[in-house]
Image (cartoon, rainbow, N blue to C red; front, top):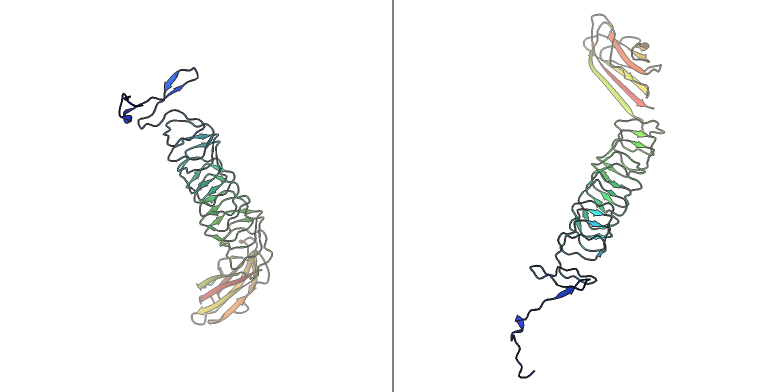
Length: 341
């Protein structure tokens, strides 16, 4: 108003206090921290910049948390935002994680993980959801895997999932309905499964399973209870070279012929001189007591070959040899050839 002077002529020097009233009607000054930020709680509004220390949020919805820390979430729902690290999540829900990295902590259940990273899961159970890739799973459980890529590690049990390729992994148990390709992996036992296609470099044990076709594969060990058809017969060879004869019959190592169809002994007399050799095929059921099955009619001359074919069948077969004339030893090559049934 004209001709009136304000007591303080500089408005920048004006100060005021803000008070709030409690439930009893007592007024209290509103407190701030050293930066001037309000320390009181604001209900049903927007907080632009708040430093929360040692607080517990037991429920509610946080739409966005920027550069803050939540040490524990119990019964809350986090619908969006970025979580750099989760220490412990108890009875909470993370509906979607997009482009985030969870480096540590415990996740009891994951519904959906989009373009996020879980570096390691130890002792956790993921009961549902979609995992696009798993680098390392230690002592955890994945109940179902659909359209995922597991690059390494150990899976103890896989139910209703698909593994397109296994490289350098060990599958210790479970059911495999089909294997497309197994590279440098180990299947210790297959029980009641059907492998319809793919490549198996080695099978240790197959119990009550079915292999419909094996093409160009090598099964180096294990037990096959039944084989319906083998398109190409197996071949087996055993050689005893440069064997020196004596006056009495001696035998080469016995061969188990119980699973062989056709087999013969090739005997070549290398000499020296004109010393002949006698040969005969012996068979046995116990590997101890032997029966003379086939003998050479005359001694095999130096530089000559004879082929002895057993006429009877027993579990074990061997070839015995001696010098035709006492004191006139010679050197022979004995080669055993056989085909499977």
